Image (cartoon, rainbow, N blue to C red; front, side):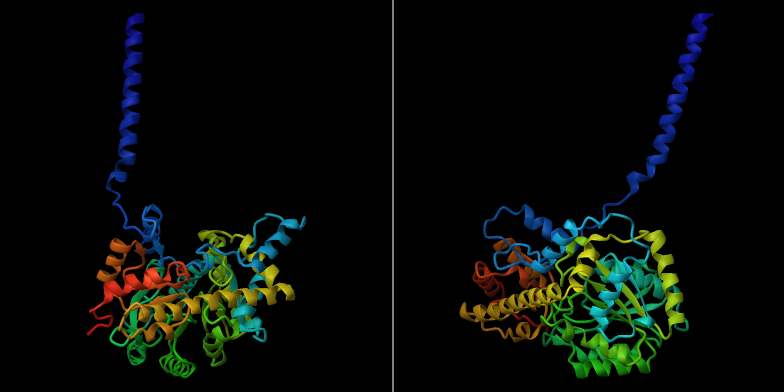
Length: 438
């Protein structure tokens, strides 16, 4: 009898174990069908650079500032602000509100829109840098902008080319991502006529994404007169303006000048949506510090928009991190630190511009006969060289110079120790070949 009991118990245990394993196998079966995703184009190149053992290697890919020694640079004003925060016993690590630190948001919006801007009509929230701001803004616009007749999604027109992440962000927001002409590869200049034509042909009431300054990746910005024409066309077509501002102050070294286009559009009555980042201009890459704001027509509209932005944020990430925003707030509330910050920002912009000029100069010295004037006319962190993907691949395979395959070079990666090597390599891969399209 005891034997039968033990046998039944063992059989039952085995059956339960088999059933558990079977259920577990069934539950996880879907995982074998998950496909391998493609690597990120830019971050993948950065990883390849790290693993490269060639002593000559140069990284001109990732858009992060480097000093004249090729090292990351913490702005002295940022370092001092951080030291103050660490020494302040009243600073804590409590959650921020859903919309973030209100004082920081006010200061950030004043930095973008100008000290004299009427903040009572601007809805603003703290965001996870510019990427998070674009995500919140895209979600908001997808939900509330009326769809043009005959369309089931809100169309957003982004420049061709643009920052690669724009496409995925707005697609994931449920928007219909479309392109407008921006860069003319035949001239290596702004395709101004194509830009106007495409915005004119866009369905009335579309969202138009504009880079506030230092267009990424081309470095080609419209002139102020061209910005005025763009503004007039957008108003005539009743389009909605979405500015992405990642380089204010970093572009020219003058934060006020770099905000000119944004402030002009606001003065002209556009209900601008603005994604603002402090990654580049404050060097707060890893702190994920930014804002998303909407220019409204009244305090009542502002209140309603704020409520909706909070409803978007709460299930997405609940509340933002506080360290980077506290640094920006500390800098912008202290006159001495603010003045030092502007000097630091200009120092970065001046070094980038010096590398831009010197690259073209050294290219000529090493024998290049190409017209590289488009490079010196550009602005911001990048030089959009006109090199094609084959030339870029050869730079990487032959010279261990790592860059994106569209010919974009991060000038921050250049310094006096490597610029001649890079120029000679560029000359080698472009000599006798065109750097413009036919």
